[in-house]
Each structure stands twice: as structure tokens, then as C-alpha cells.
Image (tube, rainbow, N blue to C red; front, side, top):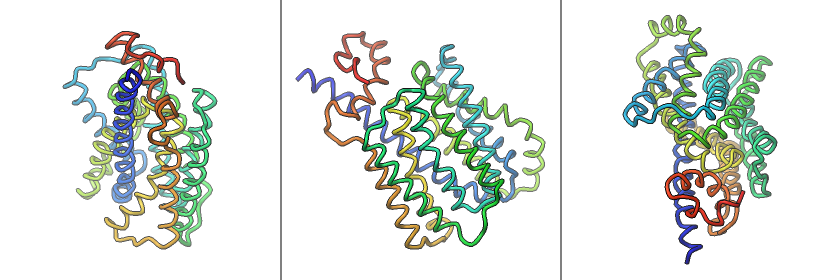
Length: 332
């Protein structure tokens, strides 16, 4: 009975983290459709600054209403590094890279990110690498390759574009791994808000270009840029941080392999781009790999419980004292 009472809140935390990850993946997939529209009127740096500016305003308003205050000093390093790498460098590099290569090549190259996250997480954070996670990553990467090949068309990929996409993937992975420790002492909202602000400040050199582009851009492109800031950035990065604080960086990275499959579906519905058989098969593999990488339901003290228990424990200590954790505090 006592064991069940401890596992029940952990299971609830797992479900909440899974829901947050789902929101993140869907919104990040929608960003590809919006970037395609906004990128026709805005240069890479200007689009990144406009997106981060809109996101910072939205997050700042929520932060002010919630009165969360500043995070502990221990979180500042991780926030600064993740803000510079993921919010700043990643967005500029990816926007620029997608102007040099086709969408399929960009998606394929950037999808080395989850693999880098797993490797860095294992090396720097001590994340476990269970066989299910490795198998799921392999299946999903095969699906990403299929989607990339099916969408690459006849266009050649420039060396510059490929290099930019690789740099974006490296920045993405480094940002995730840097963000994980910060979430041990700061809230998801604090980490996301300040990280977005750091990225926006680093993109300020593009302010002049943003003003010039905005003067000539159609309203639809500007609205897409604002959408990118409010939803795929402000909301999705917060739900990502919430989920990341309750599982490992490696497992969260594997979850993002669902993005290419959703991009295919959204492009089909919103842009009328009918996917071919190889694209559909690749999308199915991406989703199957994510399913394989998740811990099995009802495993009790298995991987899923362990992942959540380690990160829920600090909040439990602050609210109820050490006795509220019991044996779960020794796992991980």
C-alpha cells in the first residue's frame, strides 16, 4: 500500500511530462510551416530576433503575473549557455541554413541533434543509455533519413548550408545539455524566459535588418514571426523545460524525432504538399522509434519511475520534508 502511494504521484508526474513533451513536439513541428512563410520576407538574423523578441515579451508578461522572481545563482550558468547556444545561435544558423539547402536535407542534418544529446547527456550528465532508448533512436533516425531523402527533390545541397545545419544541431544539443542542470534549481518558466532574453540580446545586431525587413514584409509574414515567438518559442520551450526537468536529456531528445513526421502531415494539410510513399514510411518510422524509446507502462521501479523520481525529489523535499520521498530518493 505504501509503495503504491509513492508510485501514484510519480505516475502522475510522468503523464504531465508526457503531455508537455507532446505540446512541445506539435508546436515545434508547426514552426517549420511558419518559418517557410516568414522566411520569404525576413532575413535569418532578423527572423530570429523578431521571434525571440515576441517570445521574450510573452514570457515576461507571464513571469510578471506569476511573480516568480530571479532564479538561484546556481542556475545562471546553464541559463546563459543554453540561451546563447539554443535560443541565439541555433535559430540564426538554422534560418540561414534553410536558405542554402532544401527542407529535406536540413531536416536530415538537424536530426543528428538527438544523437548528440544522448552522447553529451551520457558523458556530462551521467544519463543512462538503456537498450530501448538506443533502439528507438536508431529506428527514428532511419525514419528521419527516409523523410529527408524523400523531400530532398533534385536540388543539390550547398556545403555552406550543410555546415550551418550541422552547427545548428550541435548548438541545439549543447543547449539542451546545459539547460538540464539549471532546471534542478530554477523553474521551467525562469529558465525559458531568461534563456530567451539572452538569445534576443545576442541577436540585437540584427535589429536594423529587422526594421528594414518589417517595413517591406507582408502582414502574413509578420504574423507568422509573432506566432513563432509566442507559441513554438514561449509556450513550447516552457513545456519542453518542464518535461526535461522530469526525465533525462537523452529521452527528451529521442522524443523530438516525432517532429519530422508531424511536419510532413502539417505541410500536407496547410501547404497542399502531398507526401509520397517513402515520406509516409519515414514518418511512421520516426513515430515508431519514439514509441520504442519510451519506458514500458507499469514497469514499477523501471526506467520511467527512476527518471521522474530523481527530478521530482527536490520539490518534494521543499514541500513535505525528506520523509515524503522514501526509497525513491536513492534511485537514479
